[in-house]
Image 1 (cartoon, rainbow, N blue to C red):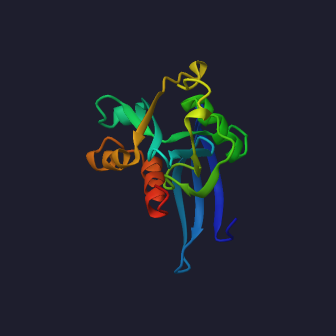
Image 2 (cartoon, rainbow, N blue to C red):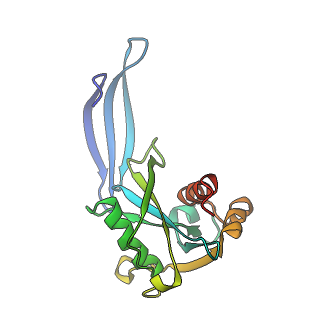
Length: 192
């Protein structure tokens, strides 16, 4: 931890689904002034995301599911097209993303490539996302996917051409940051 930051007080505002904390801290600024601030931080744990791609067919696997926060913020259907993702739930990132891939998409993958990790909303959320890519083939399909019913998941699996997926960013059909980042990574590295 940085020596110029002191946590003065932490209050739990909510721990119903995840944990919302109100944190009072002192920060020694560059100009030497000690500044006391209060911020809220939402801790939902860390996560992992993956983009499955097929070089032969030039396709990617995406998912579509309802996301309440987007509905509240103007997404008229609440449906989001995303790369497969999930919370680590005390797993290491690689085990998590393999599990989530099979649960959500129905593809059983054994080899994944971690490409980076990133904070997605560092001003308010503690979560770090571990980003992966992996090749898939039709033979890897072991079930229909769709997520876990007991977790309330109702996920549609989409296999789309890579070019169509990129176009979906421009049309606004894909607005999920982790998905945009992974689609652009594939382009940047000339994978598809």
